[in-house]
Length: 229
Picture (cartoon, rainbow, N blue to C red):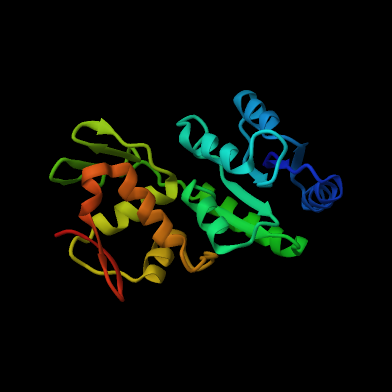
């Protein structure tokens, strides 16, 4: 199998080299960049398997790079792991809200970073195969498992792969209440690395993207979430 390609976007040369060395030692093909402009240009020509992204970059910030990647239908499937010294909860939530697949804070252990990358890549590879399962329809909302598509009143809604799995899981069992960890286990499996608020962030993103249909995903305070029955 061809080596997976990872883009490392980091303007501190010593950290960039540390990450590059450890990734290359594990057999990954690595391309290193120092600015957001570089990575946005690079992914237009060649789509990588994963992007490791610093937030504090010269020029375009890492958050803006992540927003651009995840909002473009041609690149939104690319996993993004943020690697940054900004470790406050607000910073982590901002990254996850923009669609980042994981968030690693500096200083970091190269072994932990590699473990996180392996988990994110496994998630990305677990693409739902073509399915004969009937679409899920509810009051103008259509979720099509085989096409991996969401429509609201006939118009497509762009959601990330994780957001799609969350919505499909809840909508397939309307009325049932699930905890955050039950949802995480269902969509990622037992090897998931889940932060305290990651499911909340995915739910919030879904509600924003779905507009009026966002009300179908209900919060059950003190327990978790359910899809309206």
